[in-house]
Length: 130
Image (cartoon, rainbow, N blue to C red):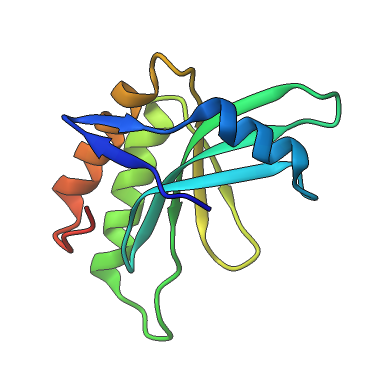
């Protein structure tokens, strides 16, 4: 799996190749990571529906914390979820305790949408996840 690259503030993701990869995969999905750290993973997903419909999504996966309750971490997650939900993201819980925030994007709006989410994360997290 090739990672996405960033150049001059734009994301370089070969969406046609990502969609081809999704079509060939058993679970009909392919993923490229844009940013990752201990608190979250941000990436692009290509998904093929049961009807053959292609979808490209920007996905923020807020990762579960450790065994101890970390109120500050929970507050950051809630703040991110609120901002993304207000922007129209679909929010769901994953089986592993992660929280998935997804929005369908087109090739032309991927960079701008990524920039907005990246800005939200930069204001909340100081982990240097770039």
